[in-house]
Image 1 (cartoon, rainbow, N blue to C red):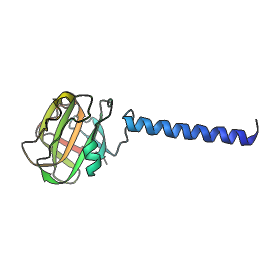
Image 2 (cartoon, rainbow, N blue to C red):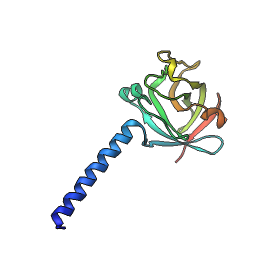
Image 3 (cartoon, helix red, strand yellow):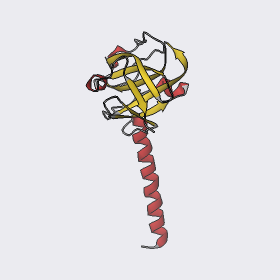
Length: 156
């Protein structure tokens, strides 16, 4: 096989792999980790960050599933009663509203466990203002002892 054919074959393979990875990332089969957070029990959560209006609106909508230790951190510009809905979400979620104390240390101020996809268009609101929301697979909060007052710490 000539060198030109080998180079062409490698380029085609790289384009195919790039497209395949893009599809997996878009469908949620793989998720980019932006931040790692440690729970009080020492276990870690691998969170992607939604800090823009577009990313917050999309959230986890359209994803088929997440691994148990994955989730999404929603970052809002200010503390408020930020509502969360289940639009396009295909699996139950635990929703945690957080405030930040010292840098990188977050306290859970409210929770909604096992929010079901079929609850859409209902909007879940916290009892206290928060600037951050974490969405995890349904049941993860209870399994790891996360409740109001729990502390999550950014891993450095």
